[in-house]
Length: 313
Image 1: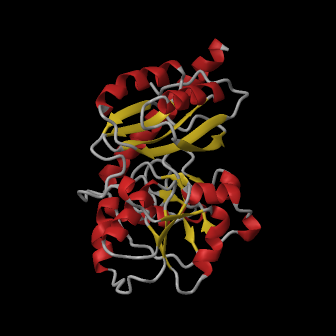
Image 2: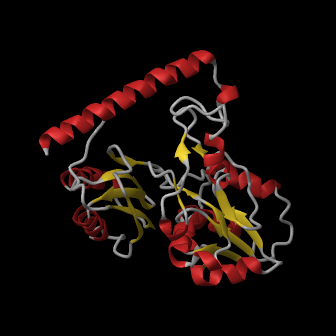
């Protein structure tokens, strides 16, 4: 049965995105106490723990989120952990996962350590001036399906499927003048920690990245002054957010996990829970019939869960 939450229905859900690079002596020992606290606080989402730090997004009540953040900041090395907050109308996650990883964001390049040197941080208030300079090379470090629904005006899309492909793209991109300013950005900032460290290790001299990522920019920069176009993909059931961190109009295709814009939802190739223009021609009729059955089961589970919640009220 689809997991349900005991969150009060009259309170908005607090969503906290966070990451922090630190040298954690025994990250595996941190997993169980953290998972237990999230469970007891009715906090859901995903947290990744690695020797290099912590990364993730969680959601819950104000009290629950505050408890988890306080627990994390009490861990040696994570005292200065920062987070970015937004809200959701309903719980955007189905369960809580605390996972152990080799990297909290996977680039797959040995010896790239953001603690040893990253690009210069640029506050959202100063970002427009940097990327409006015609000499600045603007690079979106996110994956192609994320860039597809929104990016900064004039940004280069490396068209990667995973972050592991980014180093190879840099080697083949023809960025020969290593003195030119390079402005890099991603959703919350974490990918740019490694991407800018990688660029500096390659000899690029003037590397910058957006502090707090797109999410902080959309939160702080007025829409009337914004150079952002479209929506920002987020890795939860909200799918995307836009200026002021309002939930976007995109939905998630359950077959291929790509965001689907309102225009794409109007396509004859779109069927909720079954197919979208991104994946229709890559799936068979048998696949789509299997997805239809899964979608019907999911709707039935949601209806049962809703009925149980009403009966308990």
